[in-house]
Length: 184
Image 1 (cartoon, rainbow, N blue to C red):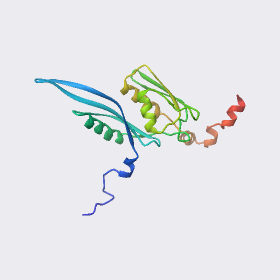
Image 2: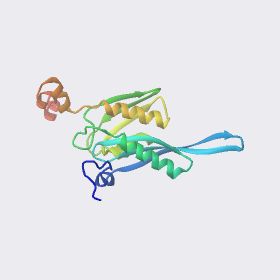
Image 3: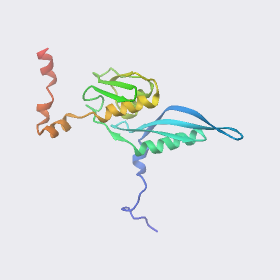
Image 4: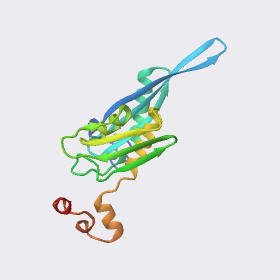
């Protein structure tokens, strides 16, 4: 029986092949029951296509590989698109908050590389950022750092988005790179 392509709910295999995943942390948790302790694992996973889409999720299971698989599947469903300048850095500096965690993300000139701590580095590598400077303030908890980073990335706007919202042209929104140097 041939499958109807319009009713096919399976995700596109081509799209999944270029998605990479990074394991950020594994947490062992114990449930105390009558016979002793039952151990489980919680895996925090970040996935991205290195072209501006990224997502994260936590997967929980009795075995580590199963927890990672569950986290990866959930993260693929929760991906967001982030506008990148020249495909390598952010359009503007941005602040993100989640709980006690605060992160500062700054655009960087070519050749800077990724200057960021563990969980944020995983996000930027899977996102496809090549030049960025980031600082985490207030927490070292990987869950809160990732959620604060996603808060910052979700508030990012490209000049095209700002121009359309204001009803102007992109050239009026961004100043020429040469003009900035002349004024300085």
